[in-house]
Amino acid sequence: MEVKKNKITKPKKHSKIAKCPICKNKSINEFSPFCSKKCSDLDLMKWLSDENYINLNE
Ligand SMILES: [Zn+2]
Image (tube, rainbow, N blue to C red):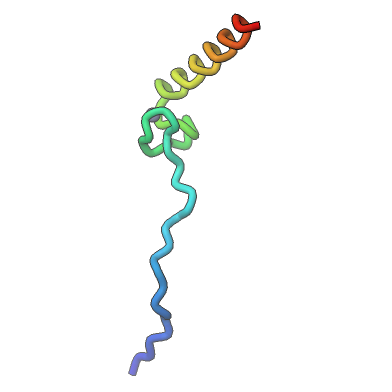
């Protein structure tokens, strides 16, 4: 006879599912936290343009 020990708990999902901040696709380790090199490059370009923007502002 089997005794069910398991309490009823909500299934726990991994709280940290990495998502690509650019396109919200699942991130890939190789390009973490991005999903592809393309998104990684896009983010880098965003960074650079942000810096340019700040520099222009001053
Ligand atoms: Zn992406």
